[in-house]
Length: 432
Ligand code: SF4
Image 1 (cartoon, rainbow, N blue to C red):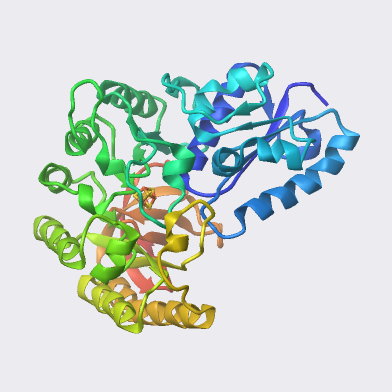
Image 2 (cartoon, rainbow, N blue to C red; image 1 turned 60 degrees about the vertical axis):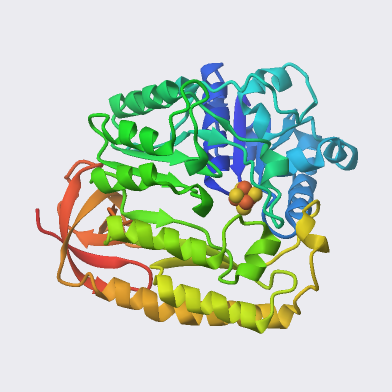
């Protein structure tokens, strides 16, 4: 075993995926080699997520497995990500075979833990961000962080604790990273942030809409996407940028969490049902073909059947093409624990089922509406389930599996005639 080999396991959201790309790129720059088998590594990093229930238990159970490996091999073990931030040195006390913990604020400071710092869970003023060392896994797509942390304080969420206050990157740095990604052959850019549309350039004050326009206008950007927007941060400049640039995806994920203003207040979401619907209407007026998607939490403490019915009616009113719904799960350290009566688990499960049933019909109608149409699809490789088929996404973010000439270069925009709508995806045939 080489003494400079590393293995990274990544859990959770796209921000964690991106942190892994940064950690991996940084290590490779220092001469380390990434391996797929943990038993061959001299450094093991677990990049953890704390968003779901029992996250800490899962990390400790994984660390239990690695303990045995540590007793056999000379390996250093580090815990990164949100569980590291939340638990800090408690991880070292409970699992003393762990060598270091580092939170998301310290991804740019990996050198300090490699040199022996054992607990790195602060939020350094100087957030180092070296995009030139990113280890991007896709040949066609580059994810680009534009803002880290979150200044909202939704009562169910641990992110403001684990990722700290918002820090936006300078506008020109972001554009330079996009240009470098395009120069390296990527054609699709995804801008990332926990509240991506809260972006403000720390030097010039330019907002998210201005950044969207500047990135969309970089020559070679065939498609521009972004995640995750907050409804209270949608403004005219963002909507105008989307309307005016055809290479900006016609897909907008705008988490609503509940259709009841009473629940939204308790969640501290900073908008009411009416305000949210007004935002959706403004976007739809500017971009009628938009594909909306959302996140919903059912069973938030104190949620009544009446509140829940408002969520169902909102889903129908908006007509979301995609929807991600979860049962509320109490996260340690969040205010929602003290906010109201817990909802019985069987009731919450039943509400979750009813959400999916209500959404199924809407999704089906949307998917069926594409039949017979020719859509531009950004080709990104063979289909995972059937390698004889090619796969890609439409500009409103539906996955399309299609037959065609696999010699077409990855990253090409291909016209695909849709002949079939499956459960979550479309099927068709390349026609150009
Ligand atoms: S906006 Fe709310 S849910 Fe989203 S990261 Fe911030 S606190 Fe969490």
